Image (cartoon, rainbow, N blue to C red; front, side, top):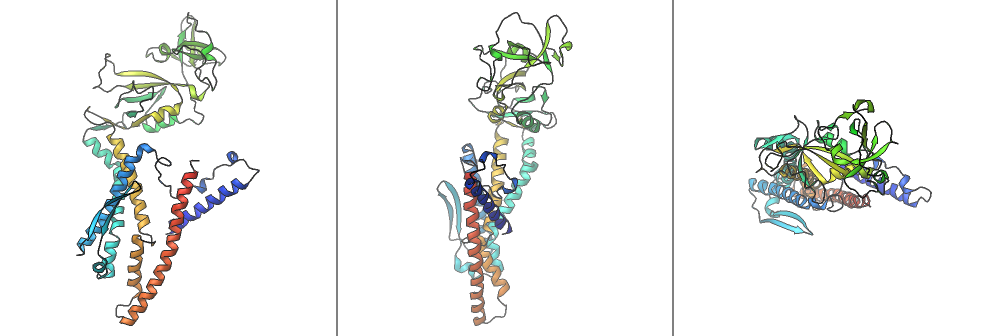
Length: 439
């Protein structure tokens, strides 16, 4: 209950802050720094708003599992206490799935208060058990199971395994599923996804090479239009897509247009930190010239899986990506688990992890919500039995019992009304704040 009240106060604070900003005519909205202390306690999960629509299947499956598990708890507890179930089933309300168990009131109320509590609280208890199972699975149980049935962990050797690539990505035809990406530019992915994210999430969207490439002066004149780069033309103004702009590692003023693949995709080209490291006549040390965040150049070092047909014996490749760094992260889904055999579905670990994360979130939310003494929730009926247990004497007469029941009912109704108002405000407020956060 304290968490719900705290959530309500946070929502009130956030709404007040937004209203004060909107009413001020002297402060620009974009200059108001976000206050981390005003973050929501509960984040509403709204498909297409706070959740990607591609997750709608996992979302609904997790809701179904959590609802069935909750109602199964009531059903099993009812059976254990000798109370028959009138009916049970599932329903769909406005796309959202749910489940129900109908327990006869007369036979339920004939039980002692503690036995009634066992049935009433069984659903919440089962949600907590499900949360514990999901948490243990995400903490390592799922990974251990997958390793036992044929996957391998890349934590020891480094790198990430390709799970899926968007079909419209230029990398889709080059990186088949289960491809091992072990290095980005000069950064080996020693710490797997941690290094992958650190490389692709740069604050300014740019990265710089510490080492250049030794190249000889080209006899072909590509002009200098490829070096005419700005945010509108992140790759220059040249119509030749096979060339890129390079600059001297020592000065950005010395630029030239060179053929991209012979310089960046070659495995044998010498590396350098300064011009003197390049030996030979007319040799220079160059790096890609990428002043625009939308025109970054990344060398992707990858190893193709053994079951993919290839004309080359060497399975290691170097692919060149040109564009925004975040485009790689958004279009290429990776994992630290890689299948050992072609028959194993590459995306299975990712799918199971996603389902477990949704189940973990939904089942604990369902438990916390249902235990609250609010209208038509399990907590309302649990509160009634608790009040009866504490307020009704064991040797009470009929008159005393009636008076106690009336007093109990008044206390229960007051608590339920207040709690229902607070819970309703938190739910509606969380939805409003969730919608405002994406506007």
